[in-house]
Every structure is written in structure tokens, then in C-alpha cells.
Amino acid sequence: MPHYKSPERALHWLDSEEFEYLLPPGCEMIGEEEAQSLSKEIQNAANAITPEDEKRRVEARKDQLLAQAALRVAPLQDAVDLGSSTQEDVNLLKLWKEYRVSVDRVDRQEGYPSLIEWPKEPA
Image (tube, rainbow, N blue to C red; front, side, top):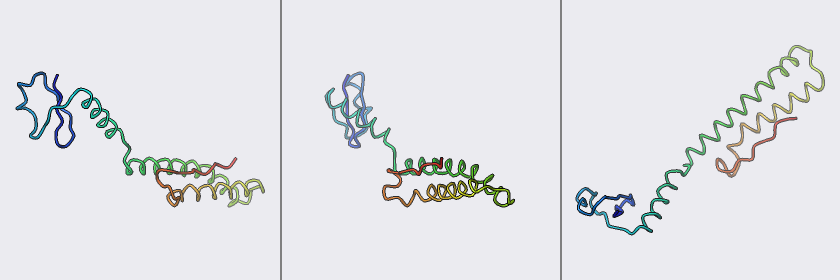
């Protein structure tokens, strides 16, 4: 089966050379080995994560962690506000708030969004 490469590096194949008129202009016939290599290159490009995709993924993770932290902060803050907190509650509240600020600031890290060092949740 003949394989063809377009000037845009798209891969085409035909059952027979007699149908070459169906190909986009500028296509050239290539061998099986080059066709396989081009096919892999095209697949890798299609599977590549764009910087925008990576940023969306990181921001979604950030939102998830902030929501989880808010669930931990709320009852501790309520206890402090109501005057019924223990020293342990106050300490834990501070740790969770520090964690939340750290999560919110991941976009300030040097490798953002590709390299993120996520803060550890308070124990």
C-alpha cells in the first residue's frame, strides 16, 4: 500500500497508485519505514500536553486542595469565633491557614505550571 507525505507532514495512504489524484497537492510517496516514523511523530504530537492544558490541570488541582482546606478551616475557625477552641484548635487552624496560603501561591513557583512542589497538608 503506497504511503504519501503532504508538505504539512500529514500521512496519507492509498490502496493503489492509480488514485493519486485524490491526494492533496504537493504529496510525495514515502517508504514504509518513513511512514511508520511519521505516524509515531503524529501520534506523539496529538498526545502532547500543551502549556494551557498543564495550567488548567494545575489550577483544577489547586482549586480541589483549597476546597478541602476550607472544609478543615471552617470548624476550627468556628470554635475560635465562639470562644470554645482549645490551644490545639488554634495551632491547627494556623497550620491549615498557612497551608491554604501556600496552595494558593503555587503559581509563584519558578517551574509553574510544569514543576509544582505541592505543600504538605497539616497532620
